[in-house]
Length: 249
Image 1 (cartoon, rainbow, N blue to C red):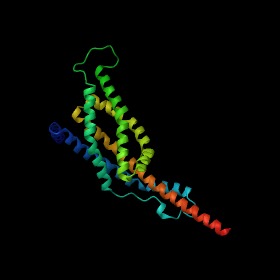
Image 2: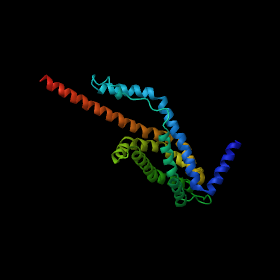
Image 3: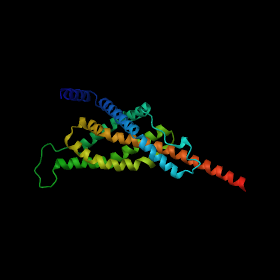
Image 4: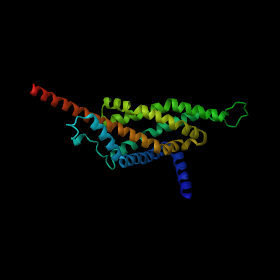
């Protein structure tokens, strides 16, 4: 308990002195935890995933190609430090943007200084919280996911086509998952959390969320690689089969 109080005092003092630097470091550290968690989950479950993919592959490939081991899904690396570095660097870079966004919402929808008597079913403070959440989830959530997959897609593939594939495979599932989690989290956050702690709260809850994003981002890349291998193998088989037919004729 004393350790938490000391950490809270350290964070508050650091935020007061240098808010953006504090947000960057905090977001980066929590991103590392998120990606390591995602990689651990992926590694633990790789056998089951490999078996499922191998079965699907065997159903699609002709018998002659089912023996090609290079087409079988390979186990993931135990730990990819470059992937974690990219993820942490991205989260550090966007921390000031998210911090400014929360400041904007605070100024645009200020809480009433004193609770006012009202006959409305919704209290003024609750209405402000609701406005903040709706604005955040309508504007910022889709754009932040768009930015994430654009940056990560380009960094990983160095091509516009890679970014398009990332959007096609991952954006819609991520946006759907976002709306299943973050509206309730942000209602709580905007209602009860002081401004200085809103991004850390988001980042803490986001350990699970960012683990999902990191897993989804990497899964779409692995699916792309497997699909290209499969298409190449099928083309090779069709070409070989065509040559055999010519010889038979």
